[in-house]
Image (tube, rainbow, N blue to C red; front, side, top):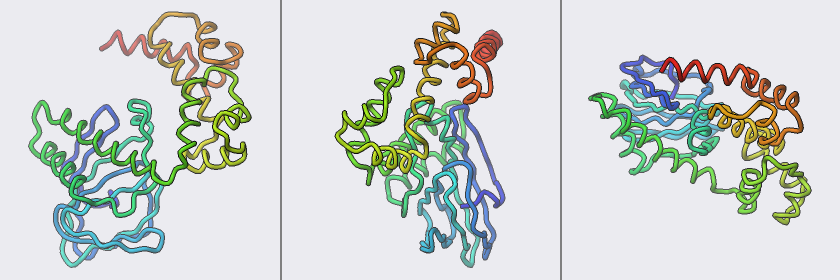
Length: 266
């Protein structure tokens, strides 16, 4: 669904989860559009048709929609209003915290399990107490597991081994030829399939893992920047600093100061 409807109630969580109860008038038409963040939507009342890649799907109450970031779709609301509950997921934050990648699409996401989970989260948003966001986070994680399993469908099994190799050896000078030799698949196929599934290159993934490791080391507060650069797999501190700033927008020194300031004020 588009978030251009009327927001009845909303709430957000620091772990990359935003919830909305949305209202759409009868007969509303939402032109083809896409969203920056992936989301699940549960139809509470009414019905609507949604068109994705030329295929139209009709949703009734308790129908579940899922769209990945950037997936284009259009919506046509039926002859009565539609009310729905939406959980938006900051996929960058989710990936950083839980190492789960959301799929780009999930055709016909609705089933009883997902509807039950989203209904439980909606009740927590509507009748909030001190434990509600803990319950919503638990629901979101279950939804993420479902999404991650769907994302695994259609992937070649050897691609999981590529992921494992990158995580195990991201600090070493791992080459595409090394990976091809380990998994027994040609280098061009590995490169093409990895980019298709993860929407980034092998080099970009290795760089991301190195910066992620460096961020954890900087959070600990010990070790010089030169030491952390070498531990993270960079050849020297200047290379580390350039890459770190390109990814995070800050130098490692600025990041460390920002963390220290945040911890001191909390």
